Length: 251
Image (cartoon, rainbow, N blue to C red; front, side, top):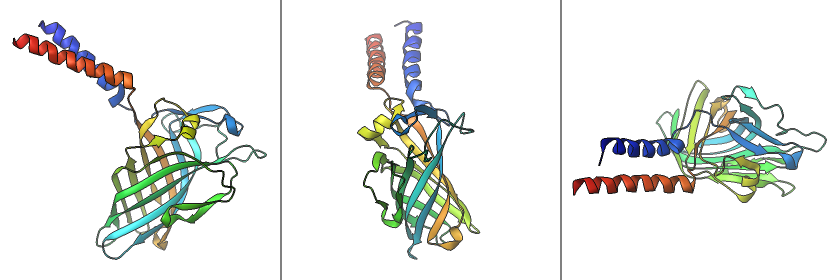
């Protein structure tokens, strides 16, 4: 096999891999707000605030449940608010609330100033009636008075999940690797298709000194796109072809 053919095969395979394995820090996504008085808007990050109950058991473990209101969509590397969004606004009955529920449990250090989650869940909902509030966040439940909230997507596989604080303030991070949209979610998150599989949820503590009640700021960023099946197939064919040419050369 000629050397330049090997180079071309390697370049093709590497290029295909890069098309779905590389990602910017903030990747764009589009949401369709037409059902709530808006249109299709594009951003790269959700911002909001949250309330949670963070409980340490005194034996090296913790549990937490958080209710987060996602009140802002931003773009341009998370620097510019998306002004056309009706998210979180009540425009004469038009608009909606977007919220997330986060639960986690795991281990804590002896001083209970650092903790690592071993299990966690994350779910995003639309609240068309603006009537859902945190109820028993430790159990991950909320009160939906009208019964009309819509689950958009969820995840339950978490890595790089930790929190730390000192003198009443701190920060946390959760990387969920299996975020999946529901059918309703696919009508709301309309681009990219398929949607991102990893969502990073992070933020800070504002009132950690009043345990178990904690509040602060939170953001959600989608970081990795699920590769198109056709792209995976072409990549596989490229790898197979490269292997076959190598076998012919060795004969």
